[in-house]
Image 1: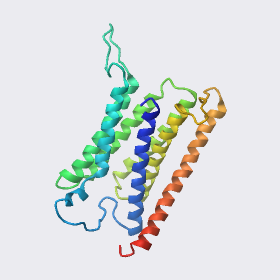
Image 2: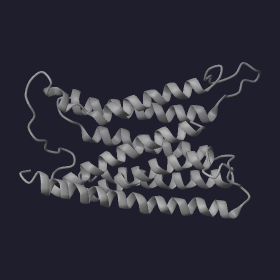
Image 3: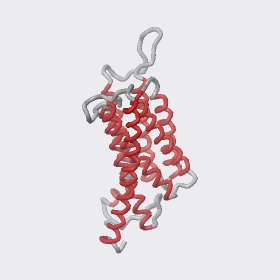
Image 4: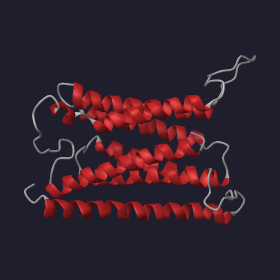
Amino acid sequence: MGNFIGHVFPGLFLVLYGLHQAIVVSKAVIFNDSLLYPSYPPRNKGRWAMLWKISYVGLLKMMAGSFLIVYEINCVKGGLILMNRDMPPRFMYPKEWQHLTIFILLTLNGCVDILSKNLLPQRCVVLELGVRILTFYVLLLLLVSHTQGTVGVELQVHSLLILVVFLLMLVLTAELWAPGMFHLWLIETFLFLMMGSWLVQAGFILFKPVSSYPWQDDDMSDIMFVTTFFCWHVVINALWLLGIYGFSSFWYRCYHPSL
């Protein structure tokens, strides 16, 4: 993950997930529907009826997590080993193992979503939230450790990402006591969009600057502009949420008034 693709691909996945959540939340607000057990229009019954009940978000998490695991392993020349054979032995590739831990938890998160929504006799929301919260607790710990040895622009980029993950961890924890509250889901969706878009931005800042010149760690203006760009992401993602809600409201009221 310590390259351009390793930042952009997870970022795009989180952005798409956030956009999906924004549509779900907007629809629930418009129709005053349940966020945990949304109502769906009746589908044709038959051999394909079960396809509508599949947890596609969970399936996407599994596929994305599996792809990132394979990608991370293949990025290490000679294989991703845990310890070398020197005396005394030393741990190898610490950051790559941290990435691998995150991707394994993402895959596990998808497995639990499918298990809860499609395989268990009754959906277990607490299990889904518990695994998701565990994922972000671990992610926060790994990100704090990940910044060791970084300075300047890279440290500022990761510090702002840690802030988003910390806030998201608090919101997910609060959802254990109020799993169906619209306000928490809205904040969660916004933070997922922030996390995703900022990861994409981090890929460009750290590996492919738009100016073709690397950012300077000893230039205070570069470090300050990292925070400025982050604030722009806050405004843009808030406008995305507002725009999705406005478009959804217009679409349902004008083209599907029967709903």
